[in-house]
Length: 274
Image 1 (cartoon, rainbow, N blue to C red):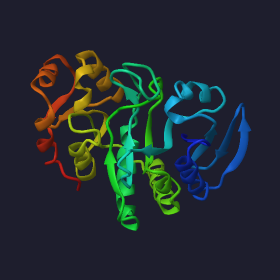
Image 2 (image 1 turned 120 degrees about the vertical axis):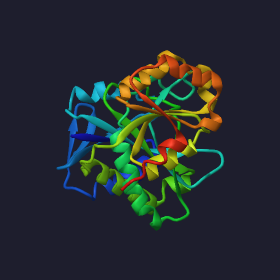
Image 3 (image 1 turned 90 degrees about the vertical axis):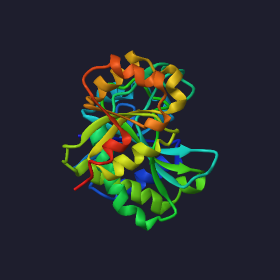
Image 4 (image 1 turned 30 degrees about the vertical axis):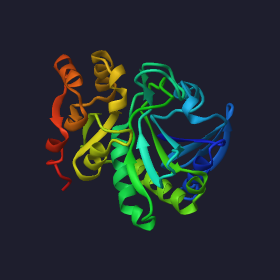
């Protein structure tokens, strides 16, 4: 069973949860120190902590409940106040400014991310003022051994508490949980700004999905060892890079990694969805 983790300290998380709980028949039950909502297709758990600081939450929750994957329902904050839906994997390439441990990556769930993105894409006509974007790997929790990812509403309190936005994200999460399609091509993404525009285009339009994405600003901390670890924990078979924003120094690292086919973003974009 998949587990949606919601923080009672996060208004967007509570917004999404309120809609999720209308989409199945749930039994509310306290198990250990946590409140669970046990449904037929998935479970929701309420936690009393900020999600970016929830290291080892999979291990803690596994002691009281059996599950295979975590979906974090969360807010996204940005100073520019963009109206966006975002999805990304957690972890830190370098220092841990926003939770997690330094130089530590969470195990991702790229298949669920892909199914979520496609379900969200179908529903975004209801909120035309919103955009969807992937984000680069950039915050905690990093210490997670079960597959996980963040599904977010951004970027201010107005959007976090927008009922229709919460409904859209909840519906897309529900569809992603139910969707059994698993034949997506999993890639690690390299290059771009924080909102990784080339990777966002690729996940929306092609057969590829992404696990960890490393933006240009993280290149100073990106080592062959970190890149190889990201590939292995993601079970990725491809590395896709934004040629215009990937430096020659980073490209030279590609010679040291194993187990992936390396594609430029423009090459990956040729593999269109059917």
